[in-house]
Amino acid sequence: MLIKTKKSSQLSEQQVTDESFYHSRRDVLKQLGYLGAGSLLAQSASANAGALDFFSSKKDVLFQQQALKFQQASESSQILTPEAKVTSHNNFYEFGTGKGDPVENAQGFKVDPWQLKISGEVDKPFTLGYDDLFKSFPLEERIYRLRCVEAWSMVIPWIGFPLAELIKRAAPNSRAKYVAFETLYDPEQMPGQASRRIGGGVKYPYVEGLRIDEAMNPLTLMSVGLYGKTLPAQNGAPIRLVVPWKYGFKSIKSIVGIKLVEHKPPTTWNMLAANEYGFYANVNPDVDHPRWSQASERRLTTGGLLARNRIATLPFNGYGEEVADMYKNMDLRKDY
Amino acid sequence: MSVTTVNNITFKQVFLNNRVLLLKIAIHLLSFLPLLALYVLAFSDQLGADPVKEVIHFTGIGSFNILLISLALTPLAKKYRQGYLLQSRRLLGLYSFTYAMCHLLSFLAFEVQFDFALFVDEIIERPYITVGMVALLILFALALTSVNTLKRKMKKNWQRLHNGVYGAVLLIALHFLWSVKSEIIEPGIYAVITLFLISLRRDKIKRWFK
Image 1 (cartoon, rainbow over the protein chains, first blue to last red):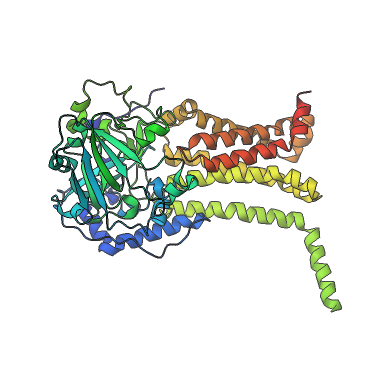
Image 2: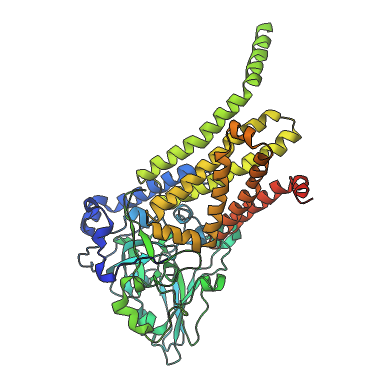
């Protein structure tokens, strides 16, 4: 049977949500009121989720976020996912496999001091400390759609800088064909790394990779914040990757190592189940996950169970104009 | 002193005389109230970032839990000679079916949002959903035939049909195990419990093949 999907030109973001929910991001920020309100909402969201979770534990220490200075994105017609949802619905298995586990378990995560090492096939390897992450490059806001391989999606106002800027500064040599990323390995802080039960059977540290042209694409962002502040721990503080045309698992969190390499690096989910998760993992409505359809997705915004939020998934998550050229000679059914 | 003793005996007797009723009331409260709370929170968007996923997971696991409890009752009743426990099996079975129906209808209404083409495709093309659907159909047949009049009319065939519960619970265990991305420990524990409860019926199952 055929699944009918609309052409990309037919889809408008406004169609997915009741008009009363339609508002620009400025209004969302206004509604949230002030910086602290977001985290209060996040707390209440997780408290409610916990009403049915007999094993939830309360954490008193709240992870500290700081306001950031950045160039704001231009007005967007996209409906943002509320901050409380962005910060309480996370796949970050280092802090547990449940969507609500990271916000519960990551509140004590220490990110300062931090070291991000850029090395490998480069002439000028360097290391960034915690403060350098926010000072070395001009910060800008990017409103991106995030499409999870599990067929839900969000719209998130990230703050960061292009990965290309970071790589250029390291002066890669001609052998640099791929970029390999690595998450912090610290089982004392990350319960999922200490226990197979909590960490979902993933081999840690989490590793990811991009081809060099993908890494240099202007869309590829190193994010250090969202919703005007530094990243919450559960979203991958202090620095994470955001590759908006690929499934979310490519956007590796809490990065300590970026290495330019000659050969395609191993990637975590590909090692775990190669038939389900490819190296490229470009968002593609025509290639289903073996166990579920990727033709459509549920956009998480507001409105409980009755939110009519199922929308068509677009090739490259709607970023085809900027990225499709990189794959023009490839069979994306084979290289999923 | 003597009054207290008399009272104690009275309470105990009242309890013993009504224990089936009390057990059923407890089952109703413990099964229905969480379901009600779940949907109230979900409709009002107070169930985390993705209430759809919460509802689907809770009703699925809930159905499995209740079915496992109902399957544990027979061996428990035999071992501890508490025959009255058996009288709550139908109620538990019906609640397990109710949760399973909520699971499927929530998938249809809130996950695929009445996209019937997608709904049918998912059931046919995804083995783990196919398996879950077959289990639900079995539970549906058992629920339909659970009334006493049908039980009497069907005679031997009733027990034959209701042995299908073992097939259903195995399919549910497989459905759960197959649905996760990598976190197989929890569904693994469920699978072990399922196999254990079925192994307690090995004599009965052996007889079918004679």
